[in-house]
Length: 405
Image (cartoon, rainbow, N blue to C red; front, side):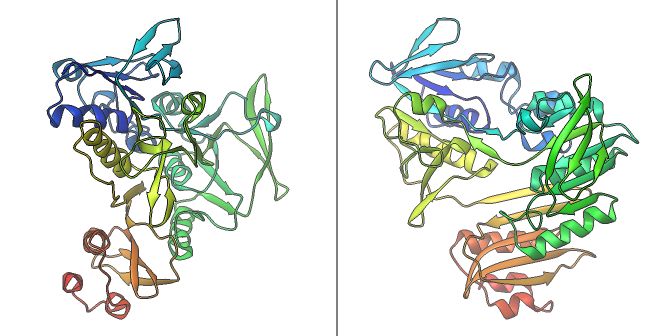
């Protein structure tokens, strides 16, 4: 094939798209461009096993470096694209080079929100937790007895707090909203994790925001909080959300809608350009959604690859997520948007628990804490569009497998 395909963004989605093209039999030129100086790698372990030193860098890579050459994928790391000309189907690279393409995929990911410099966000010792460079910069600061402030009570913040605590640090976590996990989990799941972090020694303060950070010689030393207290800090980790990377798409005239707007087959509003992963929003249940998950990055990218080869079908996500904190594995199946009822079910193992989200009698999602069986059964039901009797779910005597009907 003479068709050349270029992928901008060498994260999970970009790597998955390149691999899917080869798996589907495409043997034309494929170029995978990434800004980071390393080959594609897993991001979830960064704030967990890798940061703790329990996973080596080579295990983090999605493929060994030489595998990309074996697949005849031109992997260009440390390369920045600064412009797209959709009419000419050319890319402008930093340094003056141009690169032609026949079909283009944008798998640009998302960037972490940062604290403004006006409140000390630019001080040394203040970090976000998004990429390999972040993890490598944070790791030397994880020392017993050191004082860490975590800003943000989402999953990234909670995972960072757990790692810091396991490293022997004194940890304070603040969340500006009334509770942690406010945008992603029910109050019951949030209370469960808040209690666990407090039991591990984290000073967790909800409805508490950061007023300002101050430092000495450009390095953070203190944090002033909205509850009137001032903390001595050696390290600040900021986990207050992300924004989709859309600047290249906007410059090329693509339509944006909470990310790069694509249709059900991952096509953007510009012919010859697809988008997938954290940067893309797509049709879902009568609206639009943007998912930040490994599942979506892989599955949507594979759907885009098939459509690029004229083998496409509408992408229908089957969302799943996970989080590791201390010895707790949280597994989530489905999306809980629109729930009006929570059913709690104790697991077979000591301390295991699951929360089942219902809208009326319709099962939407499941949060399973150290309960893989509840997760697996819940996921099968949600993925199949089936529901379960809430009373049966709540009854510990119910064999979960019987819910599958």
